[in-house]
Amino acid sequence: MKTGGQLIVEALEANGTDRIFCVPGESYLAVLDALHDSSIRTIVCRQEGGAAMMADCQGRLTGKPGICFVTRGPGATNASAGIHIAMQDSVPLVLFIGQVAGHAKEREAFQEVDYKKFFGDIAKWVVEIDDASRIPEFVTRAFAVATSGRPGPVVISLPEDMLTSEVEAPEALPHTPVETYPGGVELDALEMLLNGAKRPFVILGGTRWDEEAVARMRTISQTWSLPVGCSFRRQMLFDHLHPNYAGDVGIGINPKLAAQIKAADVVLLIGGRMGEMPSSDYTLLKSPYPDQALVHVHADAGELGRVYRPTLAINASPAAFVEAFAKRKPAGTPSWAAETAKAHSAYLEWSTPPQTGPGAVQMGPIMTYLEQELPHDSIFANGAGNYATWVHRFHRFRRFGTQAAPTSGSMGYGTPAAVAAKALYPDRTVVAFAGDGCFLMNGQEFATAVQYDLPIIVIVVNNGIYGTIRMHQEREYPGRVVATDLRNPDFASLARAYGGHGETVERTADFAPAFERARASGKPAIVEIRLDPEAITPTRTMTQIRDKA
Image (cartoon, rainbow, N blue to C red):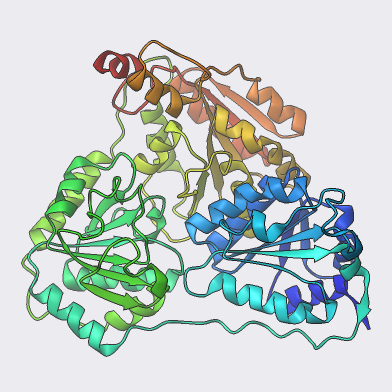
């Protein structure tokens, strides 16, 4: 006889869970008690949204479900921000929520929420466990659902009395991973399309990649001389200094790259959905009928033909597809090799940061310094805002597993993601980029980094405004500023108040020594860059945007 709480923990252990992220609550005390005797590491967070984002980052970097526990009502609704990210980004995650006891359900009891209704549109599967003896079944199924096809978040509601009940239950067994492989007919058809192509282009995206698959894709690109782009915030899928890399297919795309994709006669889309952002509002690939011959490779059959009608649909995970296609060779020397080299040259030019700009601090030299100083396995995390352009455009990702950023464009992600990344890889440098508005959405998780001695470095780009919204505001309603000014704390002092290291950068020359002091401190650190709000993009000032409007 075991309690529901014990069975939950045993099922997690059986499925390979080594850490969870949580904010404690009285609704799942029985699980917390069972964790006391478990080898699973429990990381307690400061807000449920941050905890869910940490679980998302773990799932994003490992391909295995990140695990998050929160309490009912406000705890669950706070966590929904992380669930939305995991859903839009196709990241495996399992959220466990303490629920009101069975006798109180349907009475609008204290903090009661119907989680099937609340999470129904932003989770892959939502279930409530009423019978503790079925916990092994449901938890194992949750892992299978979260990782199969298009990965995503699963939400499991745990009534409080169910967790304390004692039952007999079968021993939990690990889930069986489900892989989808391409058929020979599809590979033959792709080979024929490429051999007949004149201007092919490859776009990598989505999840279900690993280091070996990325290496195989690199070999395929070399064998076929294929130009390769990475979808929005999936840049770690291809070495940016490889001669076949053409650039990131995302917000603010290089115009030369956009023209190349539009002019392609065959587009091979592997793993991604090619949503609104990477498709430039469905203009690079027209929906539903692209101008290019589209070969869409995706692990979930439901995504094939959902937005675009592909010329060739291949239901396979990226890892399985590249393993199979790596055996195929071109019929002769590809005729487009020169265009591939030209695309890489265009990328190198596009990704070289400007060294000047308005104000006393220029971000270009800062990015150049970071490119020179940081190891290739450094992990970059960020949320959303104009500041992120400096990372996406000018940081040259070299290795898989080095990027944690939400394709859903959610603010507040960078700091909690950095905490999770550092817990996962303590020997690697982890840098979070955040705007001043972005940082203060989940900046309290800096305290979590201090509590667990996780020396992340958070670069806060502080321009005193919600920059992206101000930019759009000035373009659409010039001179009519409303609700975009911010009055911020001294971020360096805030870092020290938390028990970390703090630095303030007010001139470009201050950054390098400040960053080195932060790195040498051995503590979680915040390096605040006080950026002139005129420096709203790498190439245009706020005044230029206003005047053009």
